[in-house]
Image (cartoon, rainbow, N blue to C red; front, side, top):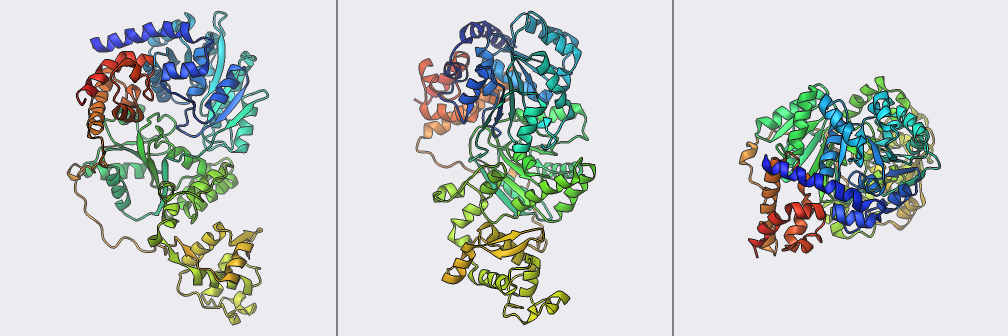
Amino acid sequence: MQEVKRIKMCYNNWVKIFSDTFTGQKPEFVLKTVFGYDSFRLQQKKIIDSILKNQDTLAVMPTGGGKSICYQIPALIFSGITVVISPLISLMQDQVTTLSSNGIKSVFLNSSQSLEEYKQAVKEILTHKVKIVYVSPEGVSSNRIRDILCRDELEISCITIDEAHCVSQWGHDFRPDYLEIAGLRKLFPKTPVLALTATATEEVRNDICKNLGMKNCKVFISSFDRPNIFLEVQRKQKNYTQIIDYIKKHYGESGIIYCNSRKKVDEITAFLDSLGYSVLNYHAGLSDEIRKKNQGLFIKDEIQIMVATVAFGMGIDKPDVRYVINYDLPKSIEEYYQEIGRAGRDGIESSALLLYSPADINKVRYFFQEAADPQMSEQLLQQMINYANAKTCRRQILLKYFGENFSSEGFTSEQKKCCCDICKKEDDPDSLVDMTIPAQKLLCCIIRTEQKFGASYVIDVLLGSIEKRIIENGHNNLSTWGIGNELSKEDWFNLTDILCQKEFIQRTGEYKIVTLLPKGKKFLEQRETLMLPFEKSWTSPLAKTTKYKAAKNIPVPQKPERSDEAANAIMEDLKKWRKRKADDMNVPPFVIFGDKTLYDLAAKKPLNKNELLEIYGIGKMKAEEFGKSIIGIIENYR
């Protein structure tokens, strides 16, 4: 307890120093001194400069792209207070804890506080001891909070809206409370507004600017790419074999398994728990108390696996989640992107697995009954289905949806292995299948039927169908009639999808008529060999159920050998020290240091304060507070 009190006193002393030091300073100085980073990422610097010029700003950045830096640094440079509107209480609490660890005084105002805690937070705001105030969308529309923020003695320097896509009905997570935020802007017409989101199509971006009352809004769109996340889709099997195999690959690491129903969440949780895995569940059917407890245990590394519905979403500020499994098909690419974005927020290699079955489609459509616009919901679902069925680079499809061009052409073998399952297979000769003859048959059949029909009709011709329309058209007399029995109908559809994505053919018009493109004509003319990552359709359940031993009996996979044995040992000791320190302070381990900082410490082995300040993620506050302990650990191996 004495240690915790001493650390809190240290934080309070630093607050005054920071208030005096950073007002009016350059962003680069604040970035290095407070956060310990040498350079800005993506478009952080441009966004910060825009805010410092009092310009309304919309920033679209990927999850883990460093959105919080974009308002935290201006908050320290501005003389007044920055108000941050955030949708989840847990997210506010995590942000306040993390800011405190860097010596930045911030508070939140929400329903989780006791009356005394609320009064204390208000007192600190009114006595200028606070740089950042977190409030909820519904809270900011209340007269009580607006009266506090409108006090004459306060200066509101910036209004930040996190998860700003919630203000748009085009977004995947529309929340009516967000529409009330525009009223706050009217109270502070000269204060710049910063809207932040990880997912926003053009329609959503337009809605954000309009519904928040942003004036001459400056829009910054960073790359949506998360190159550290390996993307993979597998056909779902009827037992949990794939989940177990994936957990084995990531044994000892944090992971999230998303399901569409509470029942499935509870079922998978019980199954994994019976095998001895460290797992809990999270969904809206649990009490607030249980949800809060389970989320806290996950964030503090007390459990490794969280099985959850989409309710376990925006409040997850945990940088070291190493994998996300989507057991069910998400309703849209936006929802999918948000969920896989929980992995690898620290930039370290992570992975995302989608388990897909065509049977999931109707289950998703069931939810459309409650949708405000069922037609739009169907459109969003179709784009998700196309992604799941993709036979070309998944990253390219994902980024194209958000209006970003991406190509894996020119990637090295190693880069392709880290991109997605399709690219990995394309670079692996053993996974490619010679599809020259089937592709020739399909394209020739399209030509023989005069490029007037959809894929289903063409495939029926290939399979020798005697359907009335085929007979009436005389297509049973074509040379291509009945020559395609080496593949099933589903396989022919898969090949059609691949050739569309490879731009050999295209679907056009209302009836999706299939026609050849120049690349397809060239293929037929030059009789080129065509190697594709083609897998025959999975049509039968798993032949037998595999029995698994309890997780505690599964050996921990060995890490790759390092030439620097001392670095390996330092890393393990630093992790143990970090966990003890986090438990003492009752904070998540990543609040002390992220994994990237530990890796840098183990590699560079600093032995004094100046060397510590060259480590990624260590600013002056943390160097002062934790430097002696860190150096003590490193000295044991010098």
